[in-house]
Length: 118
Image (cartoon, rainbow, N blue to C red):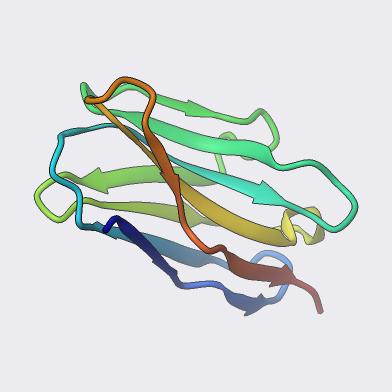
């Protein structure tokens, strides 16, 4: 059974930093894309950042130059370093893992709350 366990969320002041982690277990296939999404109250879930297995990365315009995604394939773990946090970054953050096989098979974590407030 595949499980994605996120950690690292919490309350931080504007301008602060947090590092999210997401560890995947029970996966028997190689992982293609690992990513982070977020959903703020009353809004749709949106992409934050993705990391491809060949090293490519993609970021939402709103987080470029502030957030950094990285992955450790030996540990099936993806990280999101978040710097210069703003109140608009407040949301539940979800990790997503897409497998190489079967194509398109993807899994979601349970979400971790990030609150940016003074």
